[in-house]
Length: 198
Image (cartoon, rainbow, N blue to C red; front, top):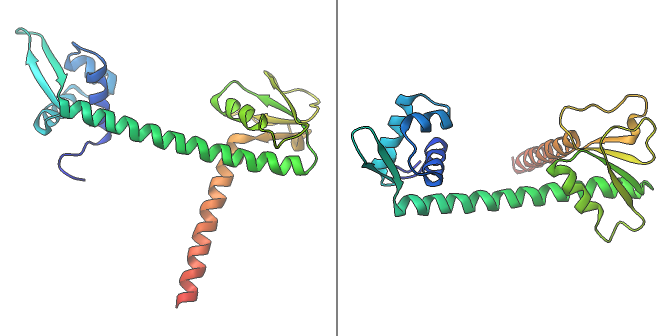
């Protein structure tokens, strides 16, 4: 890592300092959930790198201010994080479409979305796409005893009833399995290529 680059803790501290004026080191250490000594070390390191400036207001009060270099770094990291998040959402939507397509080709047209999470929002957006002709969906708060259609579980740590497990899709587990399968396929393909080259 280059001398001038920021680690996660330093970036977190820059975000806190950039978001609130007048925080003292005790407040910063509580927000970062680290010791006061470690906070002091991080502050001094950021001053040394030119990301923040310290201004003594009086004997007991100190102000931490982002420098132009600190603002620039905060902005660039925020943009990078936002773009990474958007790419991740795109990948999740693509995986959701694969799941929906499989069920659609099996003849499923009625879907219940269990949960009010961001994942539930993505499922709803995916189901609204025009290629899913005749699809009906609605949100539900509880697992129905006898669901009419497929229930997409969009909540963490919620198991589908065993009685009619084929009516339920735990999307969090399903998406994780797809990601693991894709990773295993890449490793397998890499091993095949390496073996062929020998």
